[in-house]
Structure formats: structure tokens, C-alpha cells
Length: 205
Image (cartoon, rainbow, N blue to C red; front, side, top):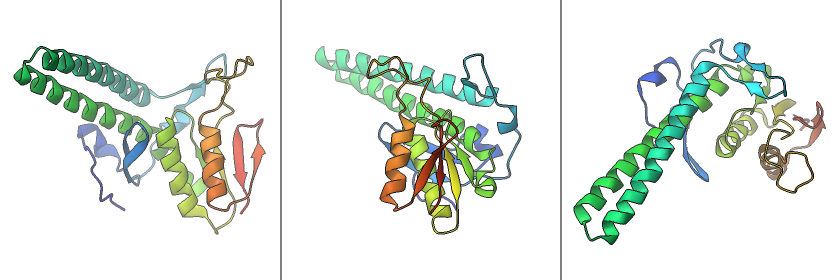
């Protein structure tokens, strides 16, 4: 199924058809994967239990961060130019900001695609959201719900959030993705139970 939204297809997208192009708070496109590759099988964990992702994921995230930095600098330069009355320079920096934003979204899309497309979750009925940003995880969960609802049990691996920031100061990381997934499952009228040390949700119907 091809998305009718706007996707930013770059050369690196030729190996798959899955992309999650998003800006903070919303997902702008979602298309399905081509044949699974071996990226997921390469995943390991470090001494703390944090997931170590393949180079393709790390490189895409690094590119996204660099583009995000460039976007911030361009935004600052545009604001300074506008304040100084140089509208031409402001327009130039604003365009640079726009292009950097597109690069950031496309790079994050590649990372999310690399994480999801290699899992074969549509067949295994278990989707692992480790390594995804909240918006990406939400989109993936919605797709899983749409695919599996009313068709038997499935699993959503959210992680327990131990490597997330400790927001409430209790010395333990506070999960960001798990509460979102639980909300989506409840909104869909699905029953679920916690498994694997609070890091996975088994949806029973």
C-alpha cells in the first residue's frame, strides 16, 4: 500500500518501501516494507542492556541530528536577519531551515524503516518498538492494531523505559512509549497484559 501523503524518497530508500516521515507530534507518511533483510538479526545489547542497532540505523539517526542542528542554526540566523531588517537574508536562511527540516525527517524515516522492516513482525505477530521515537512508535502501533485487531493475539514490545530519563526522580527511568501504546490499545477496545518484566504487552483481544 502506497501512502497518499508526502514522502521524501532518497537514494537510500531503494532497498525498502517503508518510511515514517514525521515532524514533532505528527506522522506525515507511512508505507509498507519490501522483503525483510537481516538488520534485525544483527541487534545486540550493551553491558547496561541497551539495544545496539546496526550501522544503517545509527548513521541515519546521526544524519538526522546533524540536520536538526543545521535547522536550529538556520532558524537563529533567519531571526537575526529579520530583526536587522535584511529580508533577503532572512528568506535565504528560512529556506535553509526548511531544507534542513526535510533532511532530518527523511533521515529519521530511514532509521525507523530500517528498524521496522527487518523484523518481519507482520508474520511473527510481535512488533518491537525499541529505537523508535514516540511518534514513530505510535504510527507503528496503529498499523499493528489495524492489521491484527480481531484476528487473535499479538505482542507489542515497548521496553520498560529503564534507559529513559528519570522524570519523577525515583531513580528509575520513566517509559515514554509504553504509556502511548497502552492508550492506543485501550482506545481500540483491546485487552492486554504485561509480560517480560514490564517491557512487553501481550494483546489478547
